[in-house]
Image (cartoon, rainbow, N blue to C red; front, side, top):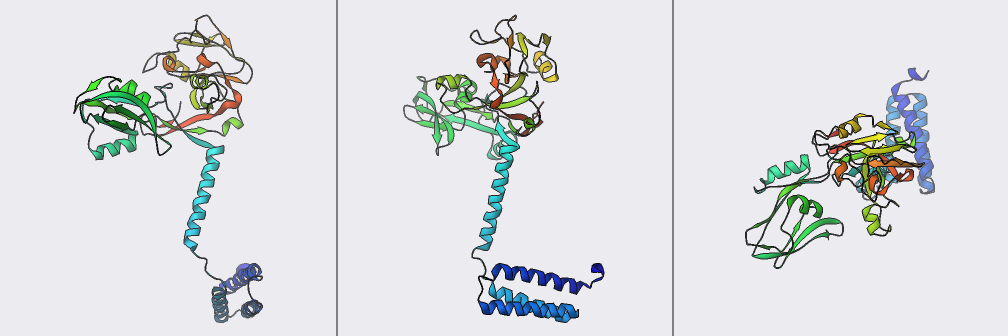
Length: 371
Protein backbone atom coordinates (compact mmCIF):
# COMPACT_ATOMS: atom_id res chain seq x y z
CA UNK A 1 0.00 0.00 0.00
CA UNK A 2 1.14 3.53 -0.80
CA UNK A 3 1.26 4.76 2.80
CA UNK A 4 3.62 1.85 3.65
CA UNK A 5 6.03 2.72 0.83
CA UNK A 6 9.44 3.88 2.12
CA UNK A 7 10.09 7.59 1.92
CA UNK A 8 13.12 7.30 -0.39
CA UNK A 9 11.05 5.31 -2.88
CA UNK A 10 8.30 7.96 -2.85
CA UNK A 11 10.87 10.70 -3.43
CA UNK A 12 12.45 8.75 -6.29
CA UNK A 13 9.05 8.24 -7.96
CA UNK A 14 8.22 11.94 -7.59
CA UNK A 15 11.58 12.92 -9.11
CA UNK A 16 10.97 10.58 -12.07
CA UNK A 17 7.56 12.16 -12.68
CA UNK A 18 9.00 15.69 -12.62
CA UNK A 19 11.91 14.71 -14.86
CA UNK A 20 9.53 13.28 -17.48
CA UNK A 21 7.49 16.50 -17.42
CA UNK A 22 10.65 18.53 -17.92
CA UNK A 23 11.69 16.34 -20.83
CA UNK A 24 8.27 16.78 -22.45
CA UNK A 25 8.57 20.57 -22.18
CA UNK A 26 12.16 20.75 -23.45
CA UNK A 27 12.37 17.87 -25.97
CA UNK A 28 12.01 20.13 -29.02
CA UNK A 29 14.62 22.56 -27.65
CA UNK A 30 17.35 20.06 -26.74
CA UNK A 31 19.64 18.19 -29.13
CA UNK A 32 19.04 14.51 -29.84
CA UNK A 33 22.17 13.61 -27.83
CA UNK A 34 20.94 15.64 -24.83
CA UNK A 35 17.50 14.02 -25.00
CA UNK A 36 19.04 10.55 -25.17
CA UNK A 37 21.34 11.28 -22.22
CA UNK A 38 18.45 12.62 -20.14
CA UNK A 39 16.27 9.62 -20.96
CA UNK A 40 19.13 7.32 -19.89
CA UNK A 41 19.32 9.19 -16.56
CA UNK A 42 15.56 8.70 -16.04
CA UNK A 43 15.84 4.97 -16.75
CA UNK A 44 18.72 4.67 -14.29
CA UNK A 45 16.64 6.37 -11.58
CA UNK A 46 13.66 4.12 -12.40
CA UNK A 47 15.81 1.01 -11.98
CA UNK A 48 17.23 2.27 -8.66
CA UNK A 49 13.71 3.02 -7.44
CA UNK A 50 12.54 -0.47 -8.36
CA UNK A 51 15.40 -1.96 -6.33
CA UNK A 52 14.46 0.36 -3.43
CA UNK A 53 18.06 1.10 -2.61
CA UNK A 54 18.32 4.50 -0.82
CA UNK A 55 21.91 5.18 -1.87
CA UNK A 56 21.33 4.25 -5.52
CA UNK A 57 18.19 6.42 -5.66
CA UNK A 58 20.04 9.39 -4.15
CA UNK A 59 23.00 9.04 -6.60
CA UNK A 60 20.75 8.60 -9.67
CA UNK A 61 18.53 11.55 -8.67
CA UNK A 62 21.60 13.72 -8.02
CA UNK A 63 23.08 12.87 -11.41
CA UNK A 64 19.77 13.61 -13.15
CA UNK A 65 19.43 16.91 -11.30
CA UNK A 66 22.96 17.94 -12.27
CA UNK A 67 22.26 17.03 -15.90
CA UNK A 68 19.08 19.16 -15.88
CA UNK A 69 21.08 22.09 -14.47
CA UNK A 70 23.54 21.96 -17.38
CA UNK A 71 20.82 21.64 -20.02
CA UNK A 72 18.55 24.43 -18.76
CA UNK A 73 20.04 27.86 -19.27
CA UNK A 74 19.33 30.37 -16.48
CA UNK A 75 16.88 33.10 -17.47
CA UNK A 76 18.47 36.55 -17.72
CA UNK A 77 17.25 38.94 -15.01
CA UNK A 78 15.09 36.21 -13.51
CA UNK A 79 14.64 38.11 -10.24
CA UNK A 80 13.57 41.28 -12.01
CA UNK A 81 11.15 39.35 -14.21
CA UNK A 82 9.61 37.61 -11.23
CA UNK A 83 9.16 40.92 -9.37
CA UNK A 84 7.57 42.47 -12.46
CA UNK A 85 5.17 39.54 -12.75
CA UNK A 86 4.17 39.87 -9.09
CA UNK A 87 3.72 43.62 -9.55
CA UNK A 88 1.57 43.19 -12.67
CA UNK A 89 -0.58 40.52 -11.02
CA UNK A 90 -1.09 42.85 -8.03
CA UNK A 91 -2.17 45.65 -10.38
CA UNK A 92 -4.62 43.37 -12.20
CA UNK A 93 -6.13 42.20 -8.90
CA UNK A 94 -6.38 45.79 -7.59
CA UNK A 95 -8.06 46.96 -10.80
CA UNK A 96 -10.47 44.04 -10.64
CA UNK A 97 -11.40 44.83 -7.05
CA UNK A 98 -11.79 48.54 -7.90
CA UNK A 99 -13.94 47.83 -10.94
CA UNK A 100 -16.29 45.21 -9.53
CA UNK A 101 -16.16 45.33 -5.73
CA UNK A 102 -14.72 48.30 -3.82
CA UNK A 103 -13.68 51.68 -5.18
CA UNK A 104 -12.11 54.50 -3.16
CA UNK A 105 -13.84 57.87 -3.31
CA UNK A 106 -12.97 61.24 -1.77
CA UNK A 107 -15.63 63.55 -0.35
CA UNK A 108 -14.91 66.86 -2.10
CA UNK A 109 -17.59 69.16 -0.63
CA UNK A 110 -19.52 69.73 2.58
CA UNK A 111 -22.91 68.60 1.27
CA UNK A 112 -22.96 65.57 3.61
CA UNK A 113 -21.62 67.27 6.73
CA UNK A 114 -21.55 66.44 9.55
CA UNK A 115 -22.14 62.81 8.48
CA UNK A 116 -19.17 62.98 6.10
CA UNK A 117 -16.65 65.78 5.85
CA UNK A 118 -15.55 67.49 2.71
CA UNK A 119 -12.41 69.61 2.62
CA UNK A 120 -12.59 71.93 5.65
CA UNK A 121 -10.39 75.00 6.07
CA UNK A 122 -9.50 76.73 9.35
CA UNK A 123 -7.81 80.14 9.48
CA UNK A 124 -5.26 80.70 12.25
CA UNK A 125 -3.25 83.60 13.61
CA UNK A 126 -0.32 81.47 14.75
CA UNK A 127 2.26 80.09 12.27
CA UNK A 128 2.30 76.36 11.49
CA UNK A 129 3.80 73.95 14.05
CA UNK A 130 7.14 72.23 13.53
CA UNK A 131 7.70 69.69 10.76
CA UNK A 132 7.30 66.63 13.03
CA UNK A 133 3.86 67.76 14.21
CA UNK A 134 2.81 68.63 10.66
CA UNK A 135 3.85 65.22 9.34
CA UNK A 136 1.89 63.50 12.12
CA UNK A 137 -1.19 65.62 11.43
CA UNK A 138 -0.96 64.90 7.71
CA UNK A 139 -0.76 61.14 8.29
CA UNK A 140 -3.58 61.01 10.84
CA UNK A 141 -5.92 63.86 9.90
CA UNK A 142 -4.99 64.54 6.28
CA UNK A 143 -4.09 68.08 7.35
CA UNK A 144 -2.23 70.55 5.15
CA UNK A 145 -0.89 73.83 6.49
CA UNK A 146 -0.91 77.07 4.54
CA UNK A 147 1.34 80.00 5.45
CA UNK A 148 1.82 82.75 2.87
CA UNK A 149 3.64 85.93 3.88
CA UNK A 150 4.19 88.75 1.39
CA UNK A 151 7.83 89.03 0.34
CA UNK A 152 7.53 92.69 -0.64
CA UNK A 153 5.04 95.51 -0.75
CA UNK A 154 2.62 94.20 -3.32
CA UNK A 155 -0.92 94.14 -4.72
CA UNK A 156 -3.14 91.06 -5.09
CA UNK A 157 -4.03 90.69 -8.77
CA UNK A 158 -5.78 87.34 -9.07
CA UNK A 159 -6.47 83.99 -7.39
CA UNK A 160 -6.64 81.07 -9.81
CA UNK A 161 -6.38 77.29 -9.83
CA UNK A 162 -3.36 76.00 -11.75
CA UNK A 163 -2.14 72.59 -12.85
CA UNK A 164 1.24 71.25 -11.78
CA UNK A 165 2.83 68.38 -13.72
CA UNK A 166 -0.37 68.15 -15.75
CA UNK A 167 -2.55 66.62 -13.01
CA UNK A 168 -1.92 68.24 -9.61
CA UNK A 169 -4.36 71.09 -8.95
CA UNK A 170 -3.05 73.97 -6.86
CA UNK A 171 -4.17 77.54 -6.18
CA UNK A 172 -1.98 80.46 -7.21
CA UNK A 173 -2.18 83.89 -5.62
CA UNK A 174 -0.80 86.25 -8.26
CA UNK A 175 0.52 89.61 -7.15
CA UNK A 176 2.09 92.49 -9.03
CA UNK A 177 5.62 91.45 -8.03
CA UNK A 178 5.36 87.90 -6.68
CA UNK A 179 3.36 84.72 -7.07
CA UNK A 180 2.48 82.11 -4.43
CA UNK A 181 1.34 78.56 -5.27
CA UNK A 182 -0.58 76.88 -2.44
CA UNK A 183 -1.61 73.26 -1.94
CA UNK A 184 -5.21 74.16 -1.24
CA UNK A 185 -8.40 74.12 -3.36
CA UNK A 186 -9.44 77.58 -4.52
CA UNK A 187 -12.92 77.31 -3.03
CA UNK A 188 -11.55 76.28 0.39
CA UNK A 189 -8.92 79.03 0.26
CA UNK A 190 -11.39 81.80 -0.52
CA UNK A 191 -14.30 80.58 1.65
CA UNK A 192 -12.36 79.49 4.73
CA UNK A 193 -8.82 80.89 4.79
CA UNK A 194 -9.94 84.23 3.31
CA UNK A 195 -6.92 85.80 1.60
CA UNK A 196 -7.23 89.49 0.59
CA UNK A 197 -9.37 89.98 -2.50
CA UNK A 198 -7.87 91.04 -5.85
CA UNK A 199 -6.97 94.71 -5.86
CA UNK A 200 -5.97 94.89 -2.19
CA UNK A 201 -2.46 96.04 -1.29
CA UNK A 202 -0.28 94.12 1.15
CA UNK A 203 2.87 95.16 2.98
CA UNK A 204 6.16 93.27 3.08
CA UNK A 205 5.97 90.69 5.89
CA UNK A 206 2.18 90.84 6.06
CA UNK A 207 0.32 87.53 6.26
CA UNK A 208 -1.66 86.98 3.06
CA UNK A 209 -3.25 83.74 4.27
CA UNK A 210 -2.52 81.38 7.15
CA UNK A 211 -4.22 78.27 8.49
CA UNK A 212 -4.83 74.66 7.54
CA UNK A 213 -7.31 72.50 5.72
CA UNK A 214 -8.26 68.90 6.42
CA UNK A 215 -8.84 66.55 3.54
CA UNK A 216 -12.31 65.24 2.82
CA UNK A 217 -13.24 61.80 4.12
CA UNK A 218 -11.93 58.96 1.97
CA UNK A 219 -14.54 56.24 1.63
CA UNK A 220 -14.86 52.81 0.08
CA UNK A 221 -17.82 52.41 -2.26
CA UNK A 222 -19.44 48.98 -2.48
CA UNK A 223 -20.07 48.39 -6.21
CA UNK A 224 -21.12 44.77 -5.75
CA UNK A 225 -24.23 44.54 -3.57
CA UNK A 226 -26.49 46.59 -5.85
CA UNK A 227 -26.14 43.78 -8.40
CA UNK A 228 -28.22 41.63 -6.04
CA UNK A 229 -30.49 44.11 -4.28
CA UNK A 230 -32.09 47.43 -5.08
CA UNK A 231 -30.83 50.66 -3.53
CA UNK A 232 -32.61 51.30 -0.23
CA UNK A 233 -34.00 54.52 1.15
CA UNK A 234 -31.46 55.94 3.59
CA UNK A 235 -28.38 54.57 1.82
CA UNK A 236 -25.40 56.86 1.32
CA UNK A 237 -24.84 56.28 -2.37
CA UNK A 238 -22.48 57.43 -5.12
CA UNK A 239 -23.55 58.22 -8.67
CA UNK A 240 -22.16 59.90 -11.76
CA UNK A 241 -23.72 63.07 -13.13
CA UNK A 242 -23.87 62.02 -16.78
CA UNK A 243 -26.90 63.75 -18.38
CA UNK A 244 -27.94 65.25 -15.03
CA UNK A 245 -28.34 69.06 -15.27
CA UNK A 246 -26.00 69.96 -12.40
CA UNK A 247 -24.53 73.47 -12.27
CA UNK A 248 -21.26 72.31 -13.85
CA UNK A 249 -22.99 70.28 -16.55
CA UNK A 250 -25.24 73.19 -17.50
CA UNK A 251 -22.27 75.56 -17.60
CA UNK A 252 -20.53 73.12 -19.97
CA UNK A 253 -23.71 72.72 -22.04
CA UNK A 254 -23.97 69.08 -20.86
CA UNK A 255 -20.80 68.20 -22.76
CA UNK A 256 -18.17 68.18 -20.04
CA UNK A 257 -16.94 65.07 -18.21
CA UNK A 258 -19.34 63.74 -15.58
CA UNK A 259 -18.49 63.94 -11.90
CA UNK A 260 -19.17 61.60 -9.00
CA UNK A 261 -21.51 62.82 -6.26
CA UNK A 262 -22.24 61.24 -2.89
CA UNK A 263 -25.63 61.90 -1.25
CA UNK A 264 -28.31 60.30 0.91
CA UNK A 265 -30.89 58.28 -1.04
CA UNK A 266 -34.16 59.88 0.05
CA UNK A 267 -36.66 58.69 -2.55
CA UNK A 268 -37.28 55.48 -4.50
CA UNK A 269 -39.18 55.05 -7.78
CA UNK A 270 -42.87 55.86 -7.20
CA UNK A 271 -42.28 57.71 -3.88
CA UNK A 272 -44.08 60.98 -3.23
CA UNK A 273 -41.82 63.46 -1.41
CA UNK A 274 -42.50 66.70 0.40
CA UNK A 275 -40.34 69.04 2.49
CA UNK A 276 -41.80 71.25 5.18
CA UNK A 277 -38.57 72.51 6.65
CA UNK A 278 -36.98 70.99 8.69
CA UNK A 279 -39.06 67.85 8.04
CA UNK A 280 -38.95 65.44 5.10
CA UNK A 281 -42.11 63.52 4.25
CA UNK A 282 -42.22 60.31 2.20
CA UNK A 283 -45.57 59.07 0.91
CA UNK A 284 -47.43 61.35 3.30
CA UNK A 285 -45.51 60.30 6.42
CA UNK A 286 -42.54 61.79 8.22
CA UNK A 287 -39.38 60.11 6.88
CA UNK A 288 -38.44 57.10 8.99
CA UNK A 289 -34.99 55.80 9.85
CA UNK A 290 -32.08 57.02 11.98
CA UNK A 291 -30.32 58.92 9.16
CA UNK A 292 -33.40 61.06 8.48
CA UNK A 293 -34.27 61.47 12.15
CA UNK A 294 -30.74 62.71 12.78
CA UNK A 295 -31.00 65.39 10.09
CA UNK A 296 -34.52 66.47 11.06
CA UNK A 297 -33.54 66.79 14.74
CA UNK A 298 -31.57 69.95 13.81
CA UNK A 299 -29.02 69.09 16.51
CA UNK A 300 -25.31 68.16 16.70
CA UNK A 301 -24.47 70.08 13.55
CA UNK A 302 -27.54 69.08 11.54
CA UNK A 303 -30.02 71.76 10.45
CA UNK A 304 -32.89 69.77 8.99
CA UNK A 305 -34.11 69.74 5.40
CA UNK A 306 -34.40 73.02 3.51
CA UNK A 307 -36.96 73.86 0.85
CA UNK A 308 -35.78 73.55 -2.73
CA UNK A 309 -35.04 76.51 -5.04
CA UNK A 310 -37.85 78.31 -6.83
CA UNK A 311 -36.72 76.88 -10.17
CA UNK A 312 -36.37 73.36 -8.76
CA UNK A 313 -38.69 71.09 -6.81
CA UNK A 314 -40.07 70.99 -3.24
CA UNK A 315 -39.68 74.75 -2.80
CA UNK A 316 -43.02 75.17 -1.04
CA UNK A 317 -44.11 73.27 2.12
CA UNK A 318 -47.26 71.99 0.40
CA UNK A 319 -45.57 70.98 -2.87
CA UNK A 320 -45.06 67.28 -3.59
CA UNK A 321 -42.85 65.50 -6.11
CA UNK A 322 -43.44 61.96 -7.34
CA UNK A 323 -40.50 60.00 -8.68
CA UNK A 324 -40.82 58.31 -12.08
CA UNK A 325 -39.74 54.71 -12.73
CA UNK A 326 -36.05 53.86 -12.44
CA UNK A 327 -35.33 57.21 -10.82
CA UNK A 328 -34.01 58.11 -7.37
CA UNK A 329 -34.01 61.26 -5.25
CA UNK A 330 -30.72 62.39 -3.69
CA UNK A 331 -30.44 64.78 -0.73
CA UNK A 332 -27.37 66.01 1.12
CA UNK A 333 -27.43 65.71 4.91
CA UNK A 334 -26.18 69.30 4.93
CA UNK A 335 -29.38 70.30 3.13
CA UNK A 336 -28.84 74.07 3.35
CA UNK A 337 -25.53 73.74 1.48
CA UNK A 338 -26.17 70.92 -0.95
CA UNK A 339 -26.75 70.91 -4.69
CA UNK A 340 -28.97 67.85 -4.98
CA UNK A 341 -32.21 66.55 -6.50
CA UNK A 342 -34.10 69.61 -5.30
CA UNK A 343 -32.11 71.50 -7.94
CA UNK A 344 -31.76 68.98 -10.79
CA UNK A 345 -34.48 66.47 -9.94
CA UNK A 346 -33.73 62.74 -10.13
CA UNK A 347 -30.79 60.36 -10.47
CA UNK A 348 -31.36 57.77 -13.25
CA UNK A 349 -30.89 54.17 -12.15
CA UNK A 350 -28.06 53.62 -14.66
CA UNK A 351 -26.04 56.43 -13.06
CA UNK A 352 -25.79 54.73 -9.68
CA UNK A 353 -22.26 53.53 -8.94
CA UNK A 354 -22.62 51.96 -5.50
CA UNK A 355 -23.11 52.41 -1.77
CA UNK A 356 -20.70 54.19 0.56
CA UNK A 357 -19.78 51.68 3.27
CA UNK A 358 -16.61 52.72 5.09
CA UNK A 359 -14.45 55.77 5.85
CA UNK A 360 -10.90 54.43 5.71
CA UNK A 361 -9.01 57.74 6.13
CA UNK A 362 -8.41 60.12 7.83
CA UNK A 363 -8.50 58.72 11.33
CA UNK A 364 -11.10 61.04 12.80
CA UNK A 365 -14.44 60.34 14.50
CA UNK A 366 -15.89 59.43 11.09
CA UNK A 367 -13.45 56.55 10.64
CA UNK A 368 -15.33 53.28 10.26
CA UNK A 369 -18.73 52.22 8.83
CA UNK A 370 -20.90 54.93 7.30
CA UNK A 371 -24.37 55.37 8.82
